Image 1 (cartoon, rainbow, N blue to C red):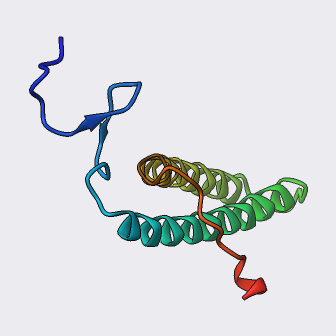
Image 2: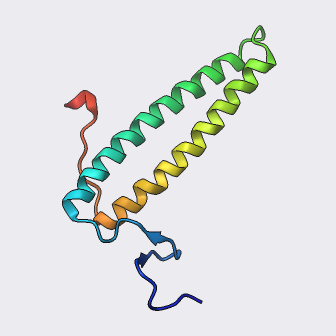
Length: 106
């Protein structure tokens, strides 16, 4: 059972919210940075996935190379999941998703 005097705020799943006491201006800057990082990770993940898919269609590619690409993709997915959870916490604390233009739009 959780002690009512525990410090910090918890979300509905009981996770500690690291950003609950931060200023909104700081949270907005963190959110924008995290959104941009998330977009970069997604693009890099997609590139690795595309390379893995292309290599899977090429019978001349050794199995060890395919396995290495698969392992790289899975590791990237785990990293992206962790970063996405952090982004979610920041956005929950901020209370909204700020507009972040894509870098090609800036």
